[in-house]
Image: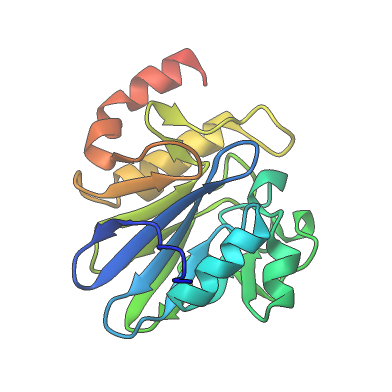
Length: 208
Protein backbone atom coordinates (compact mmCIF):
# COMPACT_ATOMS: atom_id res chain seq x y z
CA UNK A 1 0.00 0.00 0.00
CA UNK A 2 1.23 3.53 -0.67
CA UNK A 3 2.28 5.62 2.32
CA UNK A 4 -0.32 8.14 3.51
CA UNK A 5 0.00 11.56 1.97
CA UNK A 6 1.84 14.23 3.89
CA UNK A 7 -0.07 17.29 5.00
CA UNK A 8 0.10 20.01 2.39
CA UNK A 9 2.74 22.63 3.05
CA UNK A 10 1.17 25.67 4.70
CA UNK A 11 4.09 27.72 3.46
CA UNK A 12 6.74 27.10 0.83
CA UNK A 13 9.18 29.50 -0.82
CA UNK A 14 12.00 27.38 -2.22
CA UNK A 15 14.08 27.98 0.92
CA UNK A 16 11.81 26.59 3.64
CA UNK A 17 8.56 24.68 3.81
CA UNK A 18 6.20 24.50 6.78
CA UNK A 19 3.83 21.62 7.42
CA UNK A 20 1.16 22.05 10.10
CA UNK A 21 -0.78 19.29 11.82
CA UNK A 22 -3.38 19.68 14.57
CA UNK A 23 -3.37 17.26 17.51
CA UNK A 24 -4.81 16.64 20.95
CA UNK A 25 -7.91 17.73 22.85
CA UNK A 26 -7.00 21.42 22.66
CA UNK A 27 -6.30 21.38 18.92
CA UNK A 28 -2.63 22.20 19.23
CA UNK A 29 -0.73 23.24 16.15
CA UNK A 30 2.45 21.27 15.56
CA UNK A 31 4.72 22.74 12.91
CA UNK A 32 7.51 21.08 10.96
CA UNK A 33 9.86 23.54 9.25
CA UNK A 34 11.95 21.91 6.57
CA UNK A 35 15.02 23.04 4.68
CA UNK A 36 14.12 22.86 1.00
CA UNK A 37 17.73 22.30 -0.05
CA UNK A 38 18.73 19.52 2.35
CA UNK A 39 15.45 17.96 3.53
CA UNK A 40 16.45 18.36 7.18
CA UNK A 41 13.58 19.49 9.41
CA UNK A 42 12.74 20.79 12.89
CA UNK A 43 9.51 20.21 14.82
CA UNK A 44 7.99 23.00 16.91
CA UNK A 45 6.09 21.58 19.91
CA UNK A 46 5.73 17.82 20.34
CA UNK A 47 2.23 18.37 21.62
CA UNK A 48 0.26 15.12 21.47
CA UNK A 49 -0.66 12.05 19.36
CA UNK A 50 2.91 10.82 19.32
CA UNK A 51 2.37 8.13 16.70
CA UNK A 52 1.18 10.72 14.18
CA UNK A 53 4.08 13.02 15.05
CA UNK A 54 6.69 10.29 14.82
CA UNK A 55 5.40 9.38 11.36
CA UNK A 56 5.75 13.01 10.32
CA UNK A 57 9.24 13.11 11.76
CA UNK A 58 10.24 10.01 9.83
CA UNK A 59 8.85 11.19 6.52
CA UNK A 60 9.88 14.84 6.77
CA UNK A 61 13.40 14.38 8.09
CA UNK A 62 12.92 15.86 11.56
CA UNK A 63 16.04 15.63 13.71
CA UNK A 64 15.26 17.92 16.63
CA UNK A 65 12.26 19.38 18.47
CA UNK A 66 11.96 22.76 20.14
CA UNK A 67 9.28 23.63 22.66
CA UNK A 68 7.69 27.09 22.71
CA UNK A 69 6.85 26.57 26.38
CA UNK A 70 6.18 23.88 28.93
CA UNK A 71 2.41 23.77 29.34
CA UNK A 72 1.03 20.23 29.39
CA UNK A 73 -0.82 20.45 26.07
CA UNK A 74 2.40 21.30 24.20
CA UNK A 75 4.60 18.53 25.62
CA UNK A 76 2.60 15.28 25.74
CA UNK A 77 4.65 13.59 23.00
CA UNK A 78 8.07 14.62 24.35
CA UNK A 79 8.92 11.26 25.99
CA UNK A 80 8.07 9.32 22.84
CA UNK A 81 9.97 11.56 20.43
CA UNK A 82 13.00 11.42 22.72
CA UNK A 83 12.72 7.63 22.88
CA UNK A 84 12.78 7.63 19.07
CA UNK A 85 16.13 9.42 19.13
CA UNK A 86 15.09 13.03 18.58
CA UNK A 87 16.64 15.74 20.72
CA UNK A 88 14.25 18.10 22.52
CA UNK A 89 15.13 21.65 23.52
CA UNK A 90 13.34 24.05 25.87
CA UNK A 91 14.11 27.21 27.81
CA UNK A 92 15.67 26.87 31.24
CA UNK A 93 12.72 28.59 32.92
CA UNK A 94 10.20 26.10 31.50
CA UNK A 95 12.42 23.01 31.61
CA UNK A 96 11.02 21.89 35.01
CA UNK A 97 7.58 21.56 33.37
CA UNK A 98 8.81 18.88 30.95
CA UNK A 99 9.11 15.18 31.83
CA UNK A 100 12.52 15.17 30.11
CA UNK A 101 14.59 17.13 27.59
CA UNK A 102 18.02 17.14 25.97
CA UNK A 103 19.23 20.72 25.71
CA UNK A 104 18.42 24.19 27.01
CA UNK A 105 17.65 27.14 24.79
CA UNK A 106 18.64 30.70 25.58
CA UNK A 107 17.50 33.93 24.00
CA UNK A 108 19.15 34.47 20.60
CA UNK A 109 20.34 30.87 20.28
CA UNK A 110 20.40 29.59 16.70
CA UNK A 111 19.37 26.08 15.71
CA UNK A 112 20.78 25.00 12.36
CA UNK A 113 18.25 23.04 10.31
CA UNK A 114 20.07 22.01 7.18
CA UNK A 115 20.90 25.38 5.65
CA UNK A 116 18.22 27.18 7.64
CA UNK A 117 18.94 29.14 10.79
CA UNK A 118 16.15 29.18 13.36
CA UNK A 119 16.59 31.80 16.07
CA UNK A 120 15.11 31.48 19.56
CA UNK A 121 13.49 34.63 20.96
CA UNK A 122 12.64 34.85 24.66
CA UNK A 123 9.05 36.10 25.00
CA UNK A 124 8.03 35.52 28.63
CA UNK A 125 4.53 36.24 29.88
CA UNK A 126 2.39 33.24 29.00
CA UNK A 127 4.95 31.26 30.98
CA UNK A 128 8.26 32.51 32.41
CA UNK A 129 10.20 30.64 29.72
CA UNK A 130 8.02 31.09 26.65
CA UNK A 131 9.90 31.39 23.37
CA UNK A 132 9.15 32.24 19.76
CA UNK A 133 11.20 30.94 16.85
CA UNK A 134 12.11 32.89 13.73
CA UNK A 135 13.43 31.27 10.56
CA UNK A 136 16.05 33.73 9.37
CA UNK A 137 15.78 35.04 5.80
CA UNK A 138 12.07 34.10 5.76
CA UNK A 139 8.91 35.77 7.12
CA UNK A 140 8.21 32.82 9.43
CA UNK A 141 7.67 33.35 13.16
CA UNK A 142 6.37 30.54 15.37
CA UNK A 143 4.74 32.29 18.33
CA UNK A 144 3.56 29.44 20.55
CA UNK A 145 0.96 30.83 22.95
CA UNK A 146 2.51 34.29 23.09
CA UNK A 147 0.61 35.93 20.20
CA UNK A 148 -2.64 34.94 18.46
CA UNK A 149 -4.99 36.68 16.06
CA UNK A 150 -6.71 39.18 18.33
CA UNK A 151 -4.23 39.36 21.15
CA UNK A 152 -1.83 37.73 23.59
CA UNK A 153 -2.09 34.27 25.05
CA UNK A 154 -3.67 33.62 28.43
CA UNK A 155 -1.74 34.93 31.44
CA UNK A 156 -4.12 33.80 34.19
CA UNK A 157 -2.47 30.41 34.79
CA UNK A 158 0.38 30.02 37.28
CA UNK A 159 3.51 31.70 35.96
CA UNK A 160 1.64 33.98 33.58
CA UNK A 161 1.95 37.77 33.72
CA UNK A 162 0.02 40.20 31.54
CA UNK A 163 2.41 43.22 31.61
CA UNK A 164 5.26 40.85 30.80
CA UNK A 165 3.55 39.30 27.77
CA UNK A 166 2.58 42.75 26.47
CA UNK A 167 6.20 43.87 26.77
CA UNK A 168 7.37 40.71 24.98
CA UNK A 169 4.93 41.24 22.12
CA UNK A 170 5.74 44.92 21.76
CA UNK A 171 9.52 44.76 22.09
CA UNK A 172 10.43 41.32 20.78
CA UNK A 173 7.83 40.97 18.01
CA UNK A 174 6.19 44.21 16.87
CA UNK A 175 9.35 46.33 17.08
CA UNK A 176 11.59 43.58 15.77
CA UNK A 177 9.74 42.21 12.73
CA UNK A 178 8.15 43.81 9.66
CA UNK A 179 4.43 43.93 9.00
CA UNK A 180 4.54 41.02 6.56
CA UNK A 181 5.92 38.57 9.12
CA UNK A 182 3.77 35.44 9.25
CA UNK A 183 2.80 34.60 12.84
CA UNK A 184 2.09 30.89 13.34
CA UNK A 185 0.60 30.34 16.82
CA UNK A 186 0.21 27.30 19.02
CA UNK A 187 -3.52 26.99 18.35
CA UNK A 188 -5.82 28.11 15.56
CA UNK A 189 -5.24 30.24 12.51
CA UNK A 190 -2.20 32.31 11.74
CA UNK A 191 -1.90 36.06 11.33
CA UNK A 192 0.70 38.70 10.53
CA UNK A 193 2.52 41.34 12.54
CA UNK A 194 0.84 43.99 10.41
CA UNK A 195 -2.63 42.70 11.23
CA UNK A 196 -2.02 42.61 14.97
CA UNK A 197 0.31 45.49 15.85
CA UNK A 198 -2.27 48.31 15.44
CA UNK A 199 -4.34 46.73 18.23
CA UNK A 200 -1.73 46.65 20.99
CA UNK A 201 -3.23 49.56 22.94
CA UNK A 202 -6.69 47.95 22.75
CA UNK A 203 -5.28 44.82 24.38
CA UNK A 204 -3.59 46.85 27.10
CA UNK A 205 -6.83 48.68 27.88
CA UNK A 206 -8.98 45.55 28.02
CA UNK A 207 -6.40 43.83 30.22
CA UNK A 208 -6.27 40.40 28.57
